[in-house]
Amino acid sequence: MLTALAIAMPSSAQMTKKDTGNGPLSERVSKFWKKTKKTLDNAADQVRKEFETENSGLRKINGQYYMNIYDTNIYKGSDVDELCRLCRKEFAAKYPNVDIRSCAIPQTDWETEVVKKDNQVSAYSQTLYCYIVGRDGSEGFINAKFVFERQKKVGDTVHSKVKWPLWIRTDVLTNDVYTKLMVND
Image (tube, rainbow, N blue to C red; front, side, top):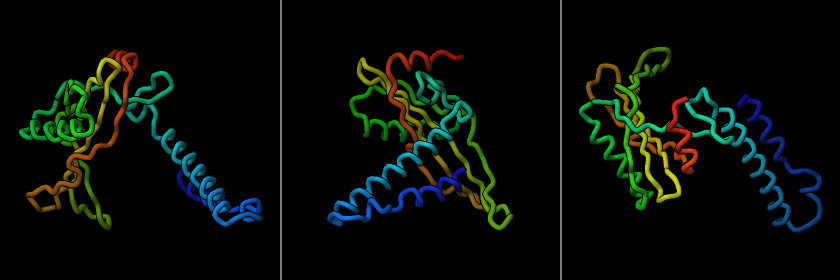
């Protein structure tokens, strides 16, 4: 699917006879750029729709996909307070007037994956997700997702921080959407 999309994009954004006809160069370039941008925007929408499904852990409400609301911290590692502090700090910097209601890591431990190089195990990658829910006045809520990723090379004892934290998604929720997300279907 993505290969077909990558092949189709350049051909649909090529200049046509109409684009290369008479008129100032700046006007023709502007038309070409707008056509190219529209093609890329459409491609991005198609890719987003392909990944945003109930199978990706998102819930569809009123025709839109939203992350689940996590308000219970399951992770009990010794670094839990520091990880939540880092996420809260980033969230508060972006939304200083939003009241943070919860910071939760809804997994029991780091997810570990094997990293291979030339078909040999070369490292281990570990991932942890953190969610922050904040009250945005009386109008609604903001639900943010952060990821922490660290790697350890085979034989090493020290983890290197790869993403620490990386803000990967934000959902702005109306009160109605928030209420529907809080109900477990």
